[in-house]
Length: 185
Image 1: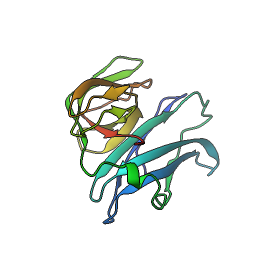
Image 2: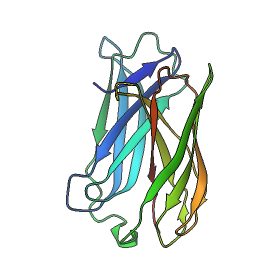
Image 3: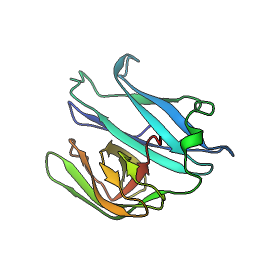
């Protein structure tokens, strides 16, 4: 079962995707669907992971927004496509990664704000990377997630980042930040 948090109009979800192959995976499409207890689809979302090197993991989290859920969401399914064969691999730098440091999560009764510093080891500027927050409870279980935007990270540099959740997810003990560098051209 995929962890989720229900609060009437918003359902937050989070999951971890790992590249277990020996190849660089690019342009991976992911569909996320929420179902009620009667197995009726009540919401859907999609993501694209642009780069995942062999052995790397990325956490993806977000919320189904604005959907008036008539009942609790019973389950969330995730469908992951095969990476596009060779798509964009010529443009992927041979080396580099983005990590997050100084992760701080604050919440009030309406929202959650996670701030961090994104550090890049890419030799070129990374434009529009996608940061994702994965929220865990004291037992280490994923209890939700969210996403944000970063304008750019300078070559071999760092920049401030923020992920905001419009759901007051209770019982967050730790937050992990993952950053997909986005599409290289």
